[in-house]
Length: 491
Ligand SMILES: [Zn+2]
Image 1 (tube, protein in one colour):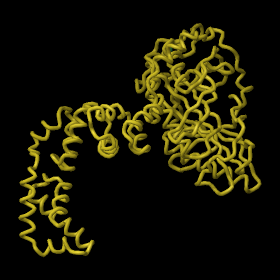
Image 2 (cartoon, helix red, strand yellow):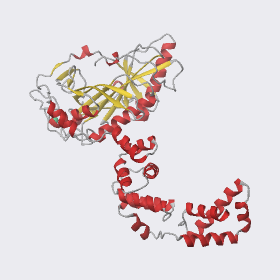
Image 3 (tube, rainbow, N blue to C red):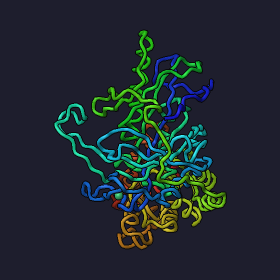
Image 4 (cartoon, rainbow, N blue to C red):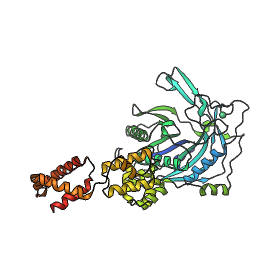
C-alpha cells in the first residue's frame, strides 16, 4: 500500500452538505475491476463468472508446487488501454509478490505490482468538470472466494467455510485515486464515470452486483480549511453506488463524532453492513512492510515500446466525456439529460436520429423519458427520427407514439408500418375540425365558460372538450391539434 494520502489539500473545495458545519470530507477510492479476458492472468483456465465451483482451476491458479505463471498478453493490453483512457503514463512495470495468508489465496502470496505499476498519474474528469487524480492503476490477480456458512456470514462466527478457486488468478486492475473527493455526490459520480470508461473501452463488464467492479472507500474528515490528513478508514464490501454514498456518510459522521468527543478513529479496514446501514470494524490496517513485497522471480518486467502505446492510443474508442461533448453540441439539450443518454449508451442512436433529420432536443428528451429499457438494439436511428416526426406533425398522438416505440423496441422496423397495422390512421384535420364544431354546438354553456374571462374555468373546459374529443375518436386525436383548434375558435 502506497501512501496516497500525501497529496496536498486545496482550499475552496466544495463542502459536503450532509455533514455538520465546519467539517470537510476527504475520500480516496480504490476500485478493483476484473478484466474481460477469455482466460486467467497466468494460466489457460476460463475467466468466467457463475461456473460450478472449482471447475475453472489448474495447478497454476491453485499455486501447486512446480507450476509456473505465463503472463496473459490480452490482460496486459486491456490494462494499458485502461491506463491510457485514464490519462495515465504507461511505464515499465514489474510484478511483485505480496505475501499474506488467507484461505482463498492458496499460494500464500498475491502476484501484483508494487513500486513499479503499469499505469500512473492519470485523471478522471467528472460531468461537472471536477477532476479526480489517479495515482496508479496496476495489474494483479484476483483471489478465490470464501463463503462463510452460519453465524453472521463472517469468518469469526461461521460454522464452516467453503472456498471456490474459480476466481483465483482472474486478471484485475486496481485503480487508486488520489484523495481528491470532498462530497458524496462526487464519489458516486466518479464511480459512474469509471464504469462508463470501462464499458466504452471494453476493458470490463463492470458489474458491481457480480463483483467484476468492487469499490473500497478511504474515508477521513478534517476541520474545513485545514490541510492535514487525519486517520482514515477503508470501507469494504460496498455493492452499489447507492451504498457507497450511505457508507461514506455513515463513516464520516462516526469520525466527526469521535473527534468532537476527544477521541480518534483507529486506522482500520471496516465493512459496510447494508441492512444495518453502518460500518463495522474489520482488521487493523497493515502497513506495506508487513507484506514483505519482493519482485516476482518467475515473470519478466513489462516494457511496452512507444509504438505499442501509440497503437493503443490510436485504437482508443470515444470515451464518455467526449461523447457527452459531441451530443451536447449536436443536440443543444440539457447537460444532465445528455449525461443520462451517454450513460445508457444511447448516444449512438441519438446521433443517428439527429443525422436522419429529427429535432435534436426532442430526440434527447424522448430517449430519457421513453426509452429506459435494457435492450433497444432493434430501434434504428431513422425509424426513431420518423416516429418523432410523425408525432410532431400530429399524425400520431402522444399515447400512440409511445405504443409504436414499444413496437420498435420489440420488433424494430418502420413506425409508419406499425401505425398502419395498429389502425392508427392519421386523423384528418378537416374531420377533427368538424368534430370540434359539433361539440361546441352541442355544449354552448361549456363553450361560454371556455371563452369567458375566468382562467380556471377555461382550463377546466379545455379538459372537458379534449376529453370529449378523445372519447369520440378513441384516443386517436392529437391533443396538441385539439388545443390549437379550441384556441383558434375562441379568438
Ligand atoms: Zn488455472
